[in-house]
Length: 275
Length: 274
Image (cartoon, rainbow over the protein chains, first blue to last red):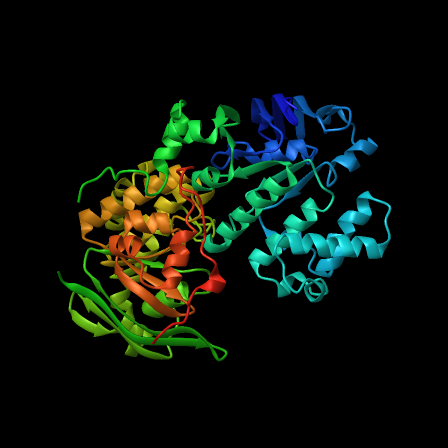
């Protein structure tokens, strides 16, 4: 299938504020191809998160958007995400079903008062008519896939009993349990130690190779981009400044901002002063 | 080279849990020592013990002040005060570390008032000089922190730390919260100020790429102990301890052809020989 799984075209998002409208996204266009990892990279305020949230239709009421977001699931009619109304039943299928999301902060993304197993199984029960037992078993299988050991015991534990890395594995299991065609990861490793980050990156990469879904990976770290992504979209100030294969963009960037970003990487730059 | 700090056999525990264990190291003047390790490895507790923000359980911290060597660990708060002029800190969070209700002038002037330096006109001038040193507009003095971006706030934090003309500056994750391009500017600023004033930095960071670029020496901490220390280039090219190897293997290279293959923690010998 050559058609991309997701197409974002001329997406404009403005927030109404007391000081007037603020344009967060300015005619953003890019594709998310099938069966690969696409990274969106940029600094704070560049519009990465607003882009991810637009795809999930998670923007606050103060946002006004125009443009088109089209998802083309493998065996179904294309869905124009941008034109679904808030009450459209397809929106429920979409969120957590066809498209799901992994957030930055694994502690706040989990409920502190529910057992891990119940939280993962809940995602199944929300989307399919199955018994609690089936949902529990599927949750156990998924948690094993994301590298949890001693799963049956751990499923009866609470998030506070888990380390940051284990919590993020749980979040990934929750996101993947309904076999989404698109997994959006918004800075999923930013809050983690570098060693745990490496484990999670390797996990996300190997799961993508196995499940053959598409991943949209939002990050500010070009090192992470180089290691996880096949394609990259560079954003700056609400605009896409460059997109292409990771190798092309990181090894021979064309846009001055991409060059600047690469030159700012610690270790990549030469110090401008002399001692 | 002149030694400025000498820490020996420092220990600190909280509720029976050892957080800093028999830590010893020396620092030379006008160099930067990077302190790395995962969260919970004791980096912050270590520097807080050195600053005497908390009291270590045992061990000595010797500091070569303008008036000669002093043992920081035995001093009372009053005796420490003159030394605090020489040892300052730059914090991690540029939003939480500035009082939102004080103007930049008041924020920068406060250390001078605490140490009873100069009159109002002199302090005002000193604040303006300092703002220029950190490349902020003189107009910044009359504004409040909310008017500044994260990078600009960190410049204010740096100005506050340096206004007393310290010799030893502790940076606890001082660039971690910043975007890469802002981070690069702040690192350049810190380096420039180091060569201008001969500053010594204790640079706590979890990002090994930043430490490699910025520091001369490095301490690798694991479970409260130093597992390895030495010149940055040596540690990065020839790590001896398995824990250092684990940390280095986890750094995501910006070259897509250098594949990330983190070492398996379970297969490593992470024991700490004391």
